[in-house]
Length: 285
Image (cartoon, rainbow, N blue to C red; front, side):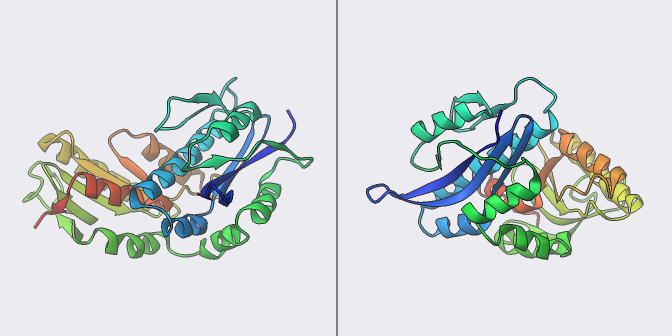
């Protein structure tokens, strides 16, 4: 298989064939690369209805998640791509992207797969993404890398959900009777018929402190679920470097795979706001 790429774009004016590129997929054999521009997604937000923008963002996040899963399962013979709003299931091959380029819907389009004579690696993917989609995307990622991910998440998320939750809240047995600890501090807590809590976590911190944080989450969640099995606990964070933080990466992977915890990538915080609105979450007090 030669290296190929497909550009993801949002059609703006069908009659003028005007469109805005928002993402890029590249593959060679079992090497997969995908990214989408949050800057471009922000531009599109001004041009679409809220429902259409939310669906677009959801599709992009689903593709991103699927490609990451394909990377992890690259030793399997077939890697599947599935859209939540479609019954189309196909392997991540150029033939499928050729199909998408012809039959994709009016919200998200795909260019015909194009072969390119370059080595499939992260550096070349970033160069191609810079030329075809967004020339500042990876520069901004590098600039923001050193920013405290916990503080960044709290600053971004708090104004979006502050009317629906208590922020910087100590959960005690008054609210969760089965809690065995005197209290557990959470970034936010709310309720509908169930208790909803959430915390931003720095998965790159010292392993001891990370283990302590996650242990508290598990203790709180177990107590919450004894009261109501549908209670929800969100953990927001970013994947730590596997080479730099092998133990932390193992903890992160366990958290992501833990069915009782709702892990949310810090860049996908919109999932929290969507949940709050859909379930009409209110403050605990």
